[in-house]
Image 1: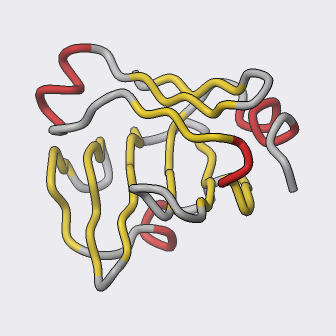
Image 2: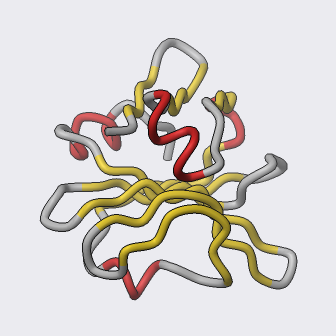
Image 3: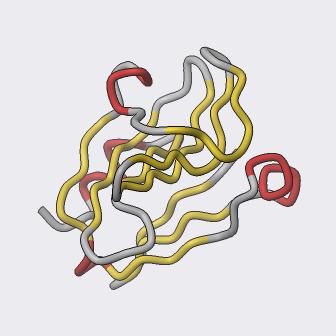
Length: 112
């Protein structure tokens, strides 16, 4: 399972080795100054946009990069797991959709 963590000035997303291989993803770090919003993820389909590069078992496990017209999402979601949606400005990814055991805790530590 991917992990998302917030420290003093950085948002970090880390992936286990297996997920790095399956999803064609790498660990990522983003300055908190690039975060423009965050919320709980409701239904996956409502937030996913574009075509997938990575692993996709629809409705079960989604992992990788979703790419649309000038838009990129880093996605790590599994069925029935809580997750956060984070919007970014000026970064490689425009949005993150990442599962986490404590979505409200992560959201509370992000700037608004």
